[in-house]
Image (tube, rainbow, N blue to C red; front, top):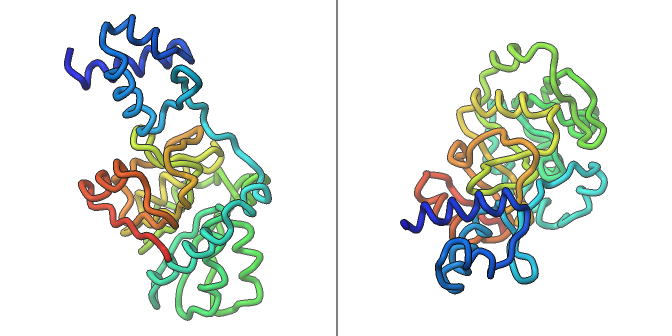
Length: 253
């Protein structure tokens, strides 16, 4: 059996049974334990499965946590990512700033910029912008999503599709090679998908804890990202994917 076919069958088997031992996989697929270990390692690195004692199990999607719970996690890394992201903002830009605890870190570095237009559903960003008349803010109406401090599922999504956005700065619940760029709030998925399609350049802001994880819904493929800004060098498979798909990997200091 070809390796690629076997690995896919192993993944399907684990998904079906939720959790299996390595010994069971050896018996079912009639290969050595070393071969199973290598195959399982590939599946774990792809992001869908996780190692458990003596075997492997399905990795559950990341649940939607409150904004405050997420905000305090890896704060220095998120601040550094936000600072780096603003380096790409130029005078005259029309940009989108996504909801998220990493994208909000852009505010302190962008608040004094001149002649930029910011489209956003990020309530924290909107409130912080009130004293700064130099920031031209366009808000996206919709349903209040309290856990993400954002507005989601706008009544008129077609309006978003008319915006000519130069650069979109996007957040994510998790990134995996198999599931792409994901989020945990169904209310925001339509907005994120529309923005990625409308933007000339897409910047994904993701700290190192987001790699190999995934949320409830995928809003774009990883190859649709132009710049991936993070705080630590990711695993080799992500580096190879970025290189092969013209995704510029930016590691902040």
